Length: 156
Image 1: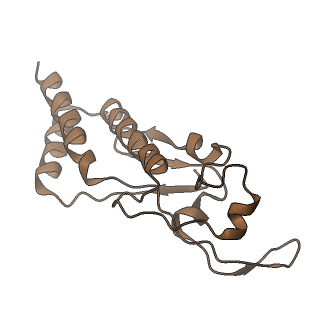
Image 2 (image 1 turned 120 degrees about the vertical axis):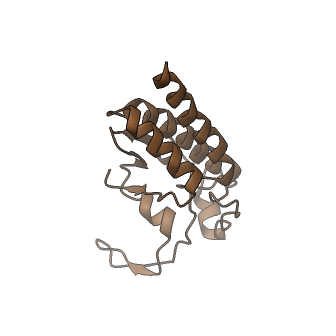
């Protein structure tokens, strides 16, 4: 994915232990990572709907000039829905990536200072970060339940 992805390192010992237990029983964890990817993708989509970061912080409001040129001035990051609908998980045997291949996705995730447009050489205003990718604290119980479900399934 060229646009924006994120990586989470699990520091919670309970969650790490669950992953280790599952990995000992299952050599290819693609199915459980696919389920986790769907949980996180839905969470990222809630960030768009609620206009908040994964940490629950409200996104910066739109600049007046941006509002003036938009068809839906109250919407942030979802004018046509391209970025929103491009968020998808990619599950692998040992990890899952959630992100987008939209080229401008990183600008919205991380923000950008004033810059000169490459073609027009006009100085463009800064765009504040409006983080949308990440795991919410309230996602963890569902993620851990999914892992426990797979551990129980493999025990049978």
